Every structure is written in C-alpha cells, then in structure tokens.
Image 1: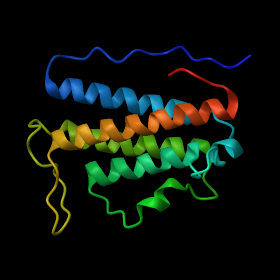
Image 2 (image 1 turned 120 degrees about the horizontal axis):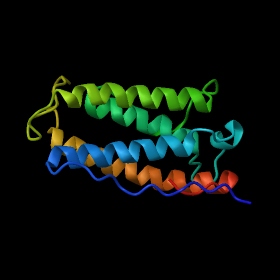
Image 3 (image 1 turned 120 degrees about the vertical axis):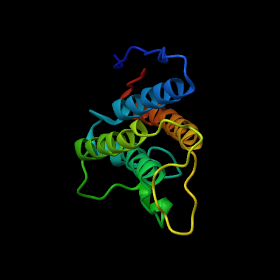
Length: 161
C-alpha cells in the first residue's frame, strides 16, 4: 500500500493583503518541507527525472532563494544551488531550509508597507518591494512544491500535502 498523506487545504487567512500573501507562502513552505522530510536519504538525493532534479536539491535551492530574496544573500551560481553537498542529509537540508524561512520571516515581520523595498542592501541593485518578493516566493515555492510532489511519489509512493 502506498503511503498517503491527507491533503491540507489552502489556509484561511485574515483579509489584509499581507495576511493573505504570508499565509499562502507559509502554507507552501510547510508543504515543500514536509515532502522532503522523512524521505529516504539516497533516494532523496538521486535524480528521478532526466533533467537531474532531485528532492533534496529542490529544498536546498529554495533555502538559497529565501535567503537571496529576503536577506540579500548573493548567489553567483544558481544552477549549483540545486545540488546539496555530499555530506548533507535530509534532516540537515530540511533544518537549513526552516532556518532560512525563520530568518526571512523575521525580516518580513518588520515590514508594515508591502510597497516598500525590502530592508536589505545589495550594492548597485535596488531591493524589490515586499509585495513583489512575497509574490515571487509564492510562485517559486509553489512551482518547486509541485516538482517535490511528483518526485516524492516516484521515490516511495507518498502523496498528499
């Protein structure tokens, strides 16, 4: 029998734009982390499709996206972010992702105006608005959560969010 997780519906958030955007982003963040958490290590690292995409690499990449978008970390080689280091296990990558999310949320907690630029400095490059960053992360995380759904099902038949 295939392991089946109950589908969790999208969140019912408050009515403000910020509450809706943050609610959906947090929902997707939790979904993608849950897809990786508990996956068998070697299978989580193995490419499941011809492009080489793997479950561990997706979450590793999303940690970089969180840190670059909300914390201003510089990434010079985006393709390399799709590959966890050989020493990284599932638990380490999940913990690092959750740490990046927590740090990003600390920044977001201080942003009252969605139209204001994120409070980060990157010389020669203007910071995106909080609204843009939230929308981008919803799109990016949702896209990769869909990939993770398929990869996890290929690994051990696990479905649901």
